[in-house]
Length: 152
Image (cartoon, rainbow, N blue to C red; front, side, top):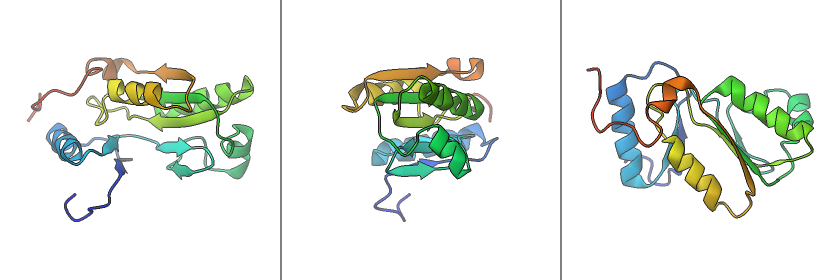
């Protein structure tokens, strides 16, 4: 990360990142004060501002149907890429729009602890409601990842 002094965040789309590599990346990100989504993330979206990854869909019709060009008041967070897209669509069908959405990642040790994402959503002045979904694999590490790898 030293080679990227203006780095604001990272999304790891790939799956199967070794635990020791994930923990090293988490430590480097913490030292720099940046977020790391993933591994196995489908991305991040801030409607009208940023879309990184396949989150919310890959076709213009999907983005329009889910009202992803209109800033709103609902944050959607999930460890599952498929589930986050379903939740984004559900939010849109109920007449609401997103403040932001992040696919935290579905690996055993999310690089961004779900608690940190929830606290960020809670602190966001644009967010009035939070929709949160977590898979059973990630619930083991809800607070934060362990300080050392479980498997070497």
